Image (cartoon, rainbow, N blue to C red):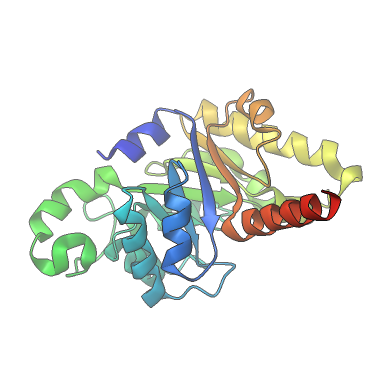
Length: 251
């Protein structure tokens, strides 16, 4: 079992960020910043399958695990990023137990799942297939996002699916789906987040969440959330530049 997966499933606090800049330089800079992991965002950025491998390779230089948020549920996408050497996948918009089981099947080799065997980077381009097959099922991290009203309604069934390591809460999409946007919906959204977190912890699953900053990490850690995705490389870049420009104008 990889150290990263051990930390995740033992509910040790881990801090990562979304990597949305489609360039290995950004990955290397972020990886050197002390993060526990990176999550390459292939859902909401211009990062394609070919680039994913180069970004994972860049993270490996600093020995920082790189997950990939795939753009959907297609098993071909999931297999591609794992074959590229990703430490795991984050599957968006999982709203039913059937979708969660399909994600497990796509990430694990038989007899647990249905992932196909191929000579990709993860297996040394075919030279280390037996070694990779022996460890992959226990080393990869599968995180699924609950971020819809349907997912909230089905949360007890979803979190019970064996093979899912982290239940990740996407507050942005969830707030839209349950009509809890902006300050007026804060109480409703917070209640939904706590409902998901409680269900996941009762099922023995680690819980993750996206936060735009570290300001309220302590608060959410208090309800059992341990897997934190802070903003993104683009958001940190913009915020840091804005702060620097403002300081220079006011100097």
